[in-house]
Image 1 (cartoon, rainbow, N blue to C red):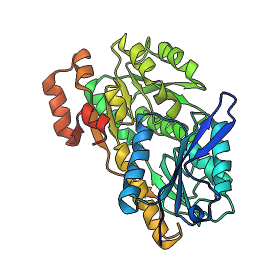
Image 2 (cartoon, one colour):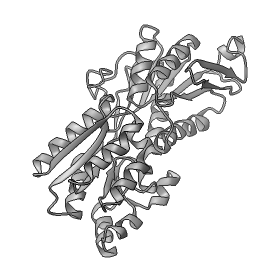
Image 3 (spheres, rainbow, N blue to C red):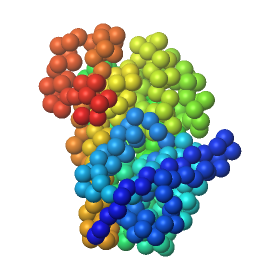
Length: 338
């Protein structure tokens, strides 16, 4: 396999969502057409997804710095995601990497019948999203990295912080299949512990602060799944919850540095690296069939010590939590992607 000089391609979209295509070389250039072309997309840009993409790119850069890379995000808009998918399909890249469930769904639809492999990243429930029929088996053109949050452990931490915990509020985008899956799993685990779950679905950014305000008067904690719409507006939720000293638990490390209290979560950068390594294995064999999905199983414990102080939790208590889970990483480390 030979590689040529890297050519980065980007998408920009106007206020009318019409894509403006630009690149550093002609996509019709025959020399460029012979390159190994990796097309990467994500539904939006926020710290967690940006770190996943960085992990993918770092693996690719080390393996073959001459890969041609096309990278963009859909700005949180599923219509733009579909436009990007169609544009990618017209380019006939060597392999496609959609980050998040909505991006994976649009890419799989656009590339159906092309034979071009798709390696998704950070998809929580590929079966429920109708991407795969099994968590253990890829298709002829699709595989990827699955990140199912360990909700039982999250609830365990909640109970350690507040042993008499009775009610937890959740905010999620009902339009995201991965969010529905996470909330269902969280609800089942919470109810098994005698904890009531109050759910508030949102459909757009403008709904989020109102959703948080509707919860803080009658819940003792808030849980946020890996939901791209909700995490993009995390600060509004934290501000509202903080006014009532309600801890916010999350499913991604980067939200800890942004002011959330605690998480049992997967390192987002490592999710990206796992995706990049899977992608390279697919390129080596030329198919996805021999490469089943990667189901992550190494969550880590993250806690924001400044928030812990405002909640009245002692340093000794926080140290006990660190020792119990033995995978503690400081908030600043999470922000740096270490």
